[in-house]
Image 1: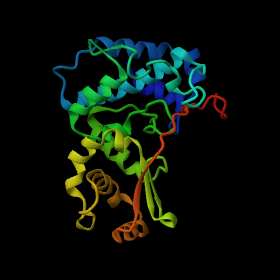
Image 2: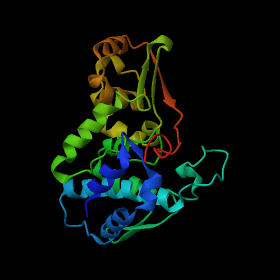
Image 3: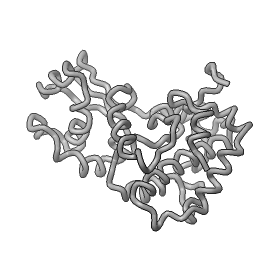
Image 4: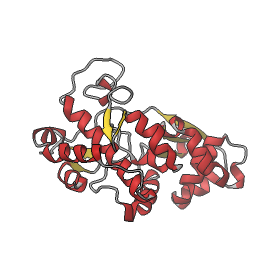
Length: 246
């Protein structure tokens, strides 16, 4: 089943035509059914990684369209947020690769086992501040290049990293705090010497993003006179329906 077809039809610049997808969900349901019964135990690392990233994104799409338009149940989250669906991440079970898993279990148990925290920047959580949903599926042959691009895109997206020189501050996504130990293990040791006195998660984020920043931003960071703040995560639904979409 080609997840590419679904993404190409219903995703534009990270936003999803949920209304159209709900009314024409045969391809999505077929892909989810295929993923449910496809064993991954003997697959290569690249095949498994691409499979689980695509499966996660597909199940987020399914979770939203199963409940779309999402009624408001809580004042804590925006209208129509995926967080308005009870237990969307932590309780709703899905069959994937012949296993029963929640979305949280896929992220915290399966994807974490790859020891590559770029996956947390890649997955779409159905929210404006989640990873930008691509119009192409992850593929075994290109997975490393795709994850490299995800990391590079982080510094160009305000929701991920924002260098605020006027206020001597770097604002970074809450995703870095949610998965701090994974980012620390992968990147903290690669931070440049000027940042040695920074906290482990700050060193990890700087090691990941600094080489990809503009020269003027790198020169500013080299002074090491800035604060680091985690941005509140925007759980508004990444919905293109009604915004000039189909």
